[in-house]
Image (cartoon, rainbow, N blue to C red; front, side):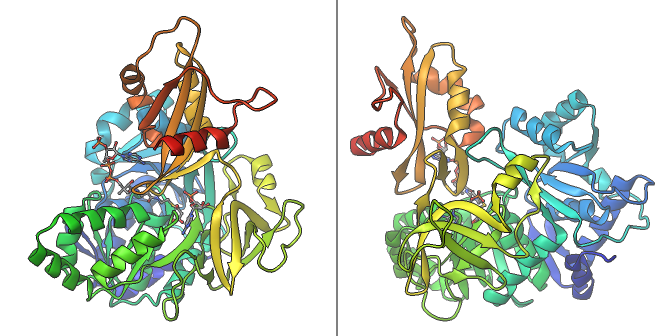
Length: 498
Ligand code: MLC
Ligand code: AMP
């Protein structure tokens, strides 16, 4: 029995700055003290939350890690919510995870308090929690579940990916080793905090290393450039769309400003891209602007990071490098056999970082593994030792701006519109977003609906799915010989028109 190492390590970093956020600068000692009080408040006199789920929605500020660590130190399972999601989606995560407590920072009270009341769960304000009197905290076994992150797939509603403290520790330490994190590092955090990229790769790695993490309240290209120029940052990690937006901001700046922006990048030791394919054109443009060859890596909520280009050595454009320390990776064909050298196959991953289970979905968990290998659904080929991602097995999974969305879920929402008879949702290639969500819709007999009306109707309902900004009304959708709508054909038609 022991306390998770992340917190043990923090004790050793004492007064070093940990979080630099809109509300101020906080040391490791303050993070331990704040999270300790949060844990005591959550426990409310009990000895251990005993794996109770705690859903929380906190600003991208000190309060976020303080709440997350508070849940962990009380023996709970952290279920991060997203401010980008509509209330129905938040309620789904709270209900599905069986959370008995919801924590919110003040700005989210209006949205979360009514949901908590409706579901009959305890509602706590983060500020009050962080001011709770101290109490004895339990020891936490590393195999206990720590985190549930919701993710969409090709079946049913979003599933909660359960990772243990030991899984997270493995996810963190492989990156610490591979990318040579140290207490000298200072990272800029520009990503959302309901996905592993922001939670693990940026925040948790920084806190493990004793480094500084500068948390921005959201992504803003001008603000990122300001931080790059004015602060002694050493690391930047983001999705390809962020780099596309930073390139656009650089291009829009006057020439002498551009020089200062480019010069500011020189002090950074590493810039990483991941969560979606990095187009070689973006890598090259960013190299021209910043002097950095982006290090591209590949990961997934269920496994953390798995493949990475090297920190030292050749970073090969268009590839995601090689397995990270402790990761076993293989490619298999549709029959489950290992592919021959140079052939493409599904990526399967094994190792201590791989998640425990989908929350309360034993059948889906079992289907996702063969022996102990997790089936990613991504297809790759190995060329000269470097792994190249070819795409996904299913056209129903779309990656837009680094977010994974399920075409099937969007179709289900659109089908609930009374005027809609048939719908087909696909991801179409896009230089800014990687893919954009495109929906082609057939109206029922005699139905009347304009594109603007449909967009207005979908604005709130589809907010969680990153906006099918490309909506189209069509008389008919192309079908195959069986009379079924074929997604690759719809996708091709969209892309031809674009
Ligand atoms: C937003 N917009 C979109 C869009 N998202 N349009 C098309 N497709 C999309 N996906 C539109 C909005 O409607 C709005 O339009 C305008 O763009 C600005 O919206 P925004 O929300 O303010 O955008 P911005 O803040 O600039 O966000 C871009 C972003 C964000 C790239 C910063 O998408 C983001 O944070 N992505 C990261 C997601 C992430 O962390 N994924 C990791 C998953 S973990 P208008 O007309 O209103 O101006 C994982 C594992 C791994 O994948 O390997 O890491
Ligand atoms: P998520 O389910 O949100 O964790 O997203 C994981 C998915 O993102 C993976 O299954 C891949 O499809 C995709 N992904 C992550 N990194 C990369 C990358 N570097 N190149 C291509 N796809 C990636």
